[in-house]
Amino acid sequence: MTSKLFDEIKNLVTEQRNPASENIDSMDAMGIVTVINSEDQTIPGIVAGELPYVAQAVDLLVERFKNGGRLFYVGAGTSGRLGVLDASECPPTFGSDPNMVQGVIAGGFQALVSAQEGKEDQEEQGGKDLMERGFTANDVVCGIAASYRTPYVLGALKMARSIGAKTLMVTCNHREKVTVEVDVAICPVVGPEVVMGSTRMKAGTATKLVLNMLTTASMIRLGKVYGNMMVDLQMTSRKLEERARRTVMMVTGVDYPEADRVLNSCKGHVKTAIVMILADVDAEEAHRRLGQADGFVRGALEG
Image (cartoon, rainbow, N blue to C red; front, side):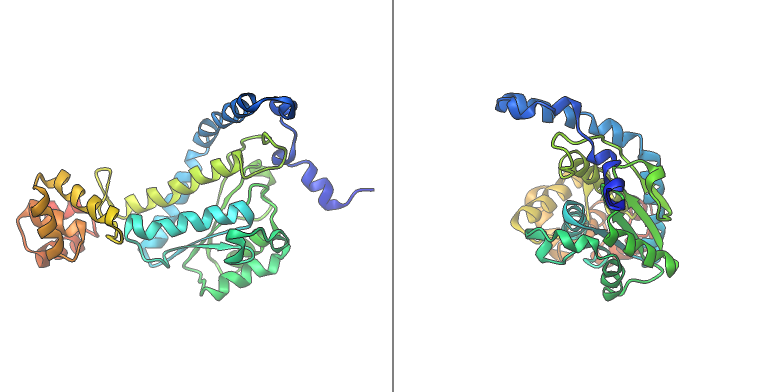
């Protein structure tokens, strides 16, 4: 007799054997990487089928962000690490408050560098870890679980729903398998992995693509990009300092010394520097215009 959990797991798409890789253990290096690459090439098209749901999630996030809400990614293992990664990259890329997008992983910080597999089974802990971060009904939880069934993630989602918060789910199993109620489910079903059950592979890649879109599209909708350039980046490294100068030069046509001078005069704020130069105003007026335009450079230049 098998257990209920065994029966549940054996039917997951992510736990099936992949016919394309059944003999991969007998292949040479070129054969192995060719199979992996061939399977990876299917992922973007599958993610494309979920774009309407991704767009719905972005609209939800933008509405909450504009009202002071935050996004909390919650996951275990690879899924949790991907959430933490995406969250950690928002401040340097978009100049966002570090609290605006947060990654919560089962097992805490240690799980980022060392597997804490048993922690994913602690359903109640998911909700507790959120509440310890001051989670409120104005925030959004995005549960990440390739299998959809991770107890830690389900616990966080259930707690969020119980207090009236909005919820998202990213999973690589079929939508009808998502048994917990969420506002938007994003389900790129990438099929069996090259190595059975190793969801750090295709499922992980699909998840990373989705998370990239969730935060990037939201930040664009919040005015943190002008054209296709980052204009709210933080000058926290030499590379980012030079990128800021180059961005100002590309947008305005000024030379390197002038871009550097204007950026220094407005504390390194790229948006302000662009408006100062193109509208021929001082930093105070540029700040005022940006405020009136909700942070959008185009609006600030028009007004």
